[in-house]
View 1: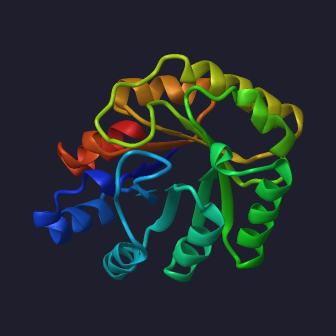
View 2: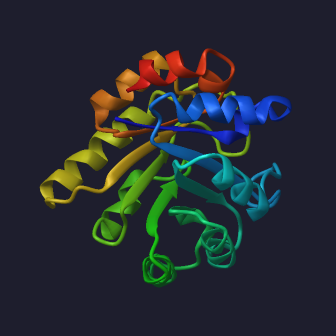
View 3: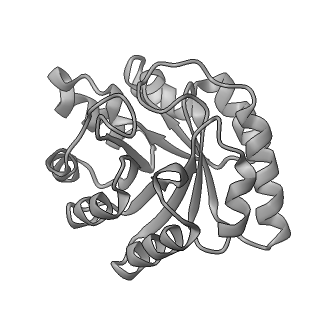
Length: 214
């Protein structure tokens, strides 16, 4: 299981201390929720924040774009050091545009992910199974941290894992929203292999919280 703590929940008055604890925790990825105040009703990070974290941490930089113009921001964040760029199905105008952006991300040497909001039918992902390295299932409404886990996301993960297995593909299934030791275990059973956790990691003992998710 890959644990990807979300920097949305970092206590920025203790940033150096918390990142040092995170580096020692066994977490493999670091998750950045990029929001533009338009696609979702919140505003978060620009690329300079990512650059700052890269100076403090060797972890894999997992960037989730919740923005209205993913094509523009994908390049901006890849230039800043992102290893994986995940963007939203709902932000794109066509299937062709989705595949084109995935190809551009790959051409720049990165990994590409595709996400769906909770109210989007997960079956829309089936046509893209061969195009992406990761699929992100949102288990809360995107926009704010600290929300409760949505139970119906488990069915989506299970369906998606079945489709990937049928196709002989090993793309990651990431889940984001309301993750703790209990919901994380259920997500793992349903087929997820990457857990994003913010409040649960950074508002508790970081090392213990990460271990409980592995």
